[in-house]
Image (cartoon, rainbow, N blue to C red; front, side, top):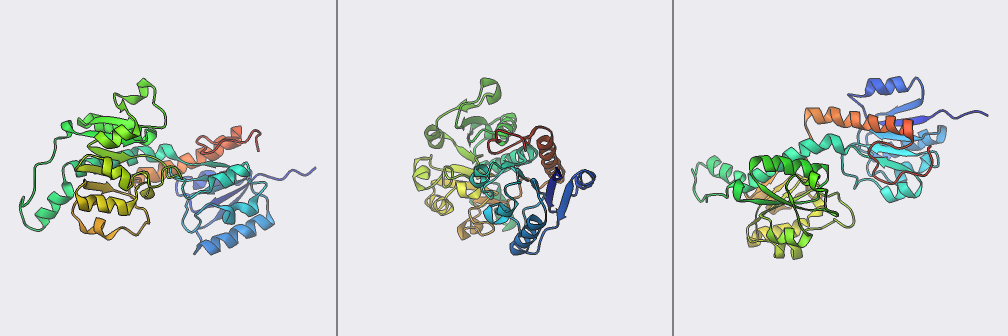
Length: 334
């Protein structure tokens, strides 16, 4: 009986893992697909591959003109397809239920992006606490301290972290080192050894008592618009909001209303609900510190995410499960 060789599709150029993938190509049927000119071009190329070969794993070194990772993109590779792996911690661009229903694993790269995202979180927390965007705007207008008020001292500020996964934990440690007090809400309380002194509270207590609220949750049906008008209304007057998770975790229009009313004093945002579109008010006011979904963009991260992506493939080849699966693995190996 002829055995079908293992097939792997690699979409995008792997700058840091290309040599390893070329070595794999000596053992397996590895097809390299460059970033296509449009999603339609990507769909056409994937249909062509699926019609002429059997593939068991797809590595997305890039999502440009490929996302969303859904039935339209992946269906033709079934039933042989068993693993899809992509970059980054977020997976809102992936139809995970669809993959799970066909016993296909999805693996992300949460470890590589955790530290730079946590650092970006701390940067935004410091900016909103010390009113950095307003201070800079005054200086640039040559209005030396005009209209500025003294900011709170970080030692008197409690940061509430919504979500205490790898990014939340790292952010908490960095904030603790700077003198902030921290509390957190998570779906389940962490073991004391992992809390690092942070206080576990309910979601209600956190949004009602924290001076700064920082979001660290994936975007799911349950977390979409986790913060909207009702939640903002219950917060402290002058609360500060930071988001390095996913834009749609916050109802952006509701955030604008809360800022216009004075309920939210300042916001530090690296992600937005309809990227790259941003609510005009958030661009116009000097009470926001903004980034273009840039938290993970460091030279080291580019290298680390590719290596973690490759490690997921290697782990799957060895054990039948990648190192960081998002969904439950099937009962049997591929």
